[in-house]
Length: 309
Image (cartoon, rainbow, N blue to C red):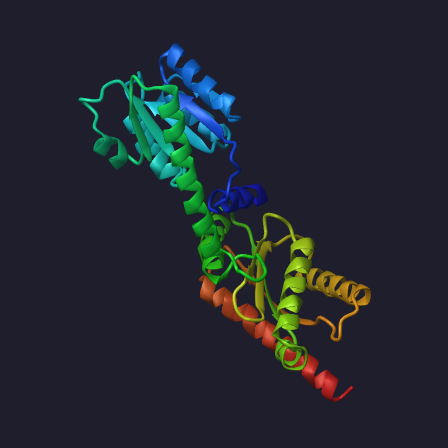
């Protein structure tokens, strides 16, 4: 279950790639596969090959690639059909179509299938390299913008928008797999006091420090997000380890942090919990409301304890 959720999270999260890519070259001609592979390898890219669309889909199912370059006319599954299928399964995967049949297959038909680039044979090695570089440069720019739109600028965690998109998918998987999910709703205590007495810069640092603690405390498959000014959420697969123990461990890590850092305040949080039961599924909003109410009750209890020690 956790592997499936991590795979889902990774597949839907854009990554800004480096200048070296893993490329799948699909062509039924040995000489063309060799030529394109040689050009890209010399530029530092890693290339694998397939002789038709079906073999390409098999390889894409077993490994992750940064780009696909495909011929059009091939046995079993042609390049246009392959590109359409890739557009359904891997929406952000850039595809470059190459063909010697320029009169029959236009640039428009290639782009309509989902390709980002189109080049006709014969081509020079320089033109091929330039078109590939252009495709990847544009793709990287788009991924950067998308990543920024899904990430909280201050903490680097997911933002509210990304949390809702991913959680909706997690709830579907959990319902299908009959697995319980646990949501923590975390509110930083006294952020307004920190801002008023020590400035917003110190308040921002406190938020970043809490985000860092959360990253260290939870797993890669868990969803961590900042959904409001001082509000954070964590969604993960519920295990035999109960929510009370998880919350206790989180408080212990924060106390340890406070003991090591000399700041004019101490980090403090209030935490609420809610469980998603696949036998009685509820919406994201309902799950959040339950966890929020739990958090508010804990915060009120803490205030009463401080007022009447």
